[in-house]
Amino acid sequence: MTVRSLLEKKGNFVSVAPPTARVQDVVDQLERDDVAAVVISGDGKEIEGIVSARAIARGLKQFGRDVMDRPVGDLMTREVATCDIGDPLSRIYELMDEHQVRHIPITDGGALCGIINTLDVVKHRLAEIDAEAAALKDYISGRT
Image (cartoon, rainbow, N blue to C red):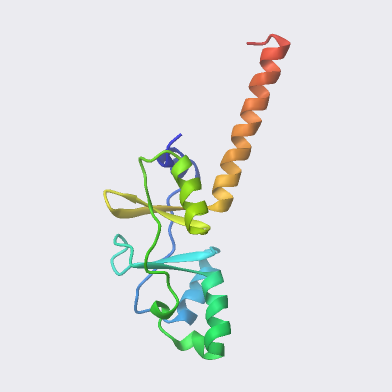
């Protein structure tokens, strides 16, 4: 299975904020979009960084309450692990493990086109397990 097929099932919505945003703006956006990470991009295509709720929590520890007025660039991860839409889904697992991240932005021809998180991967894997179990039950009972 490819990354494309998972995105087709889950949708390609990505919460994006400009690099000029303040941390408070991103916190508001996390809540509004009901997500745990926001991709930072000036044009919605080129990935300049990513900021997660976890990064904001670390920022609170480092800067205190004043972090909310800081530019998002102070907290965002600038070297973002990405995956191409045509890659096998296993590449997502590898990147999440290798970089210890929960969100992988997806690109198509270098442009942002989606995002996959750990919950998406778990839901997909559970559906695969259910389908495999059903196929085995059918085979054992002679229904195939």
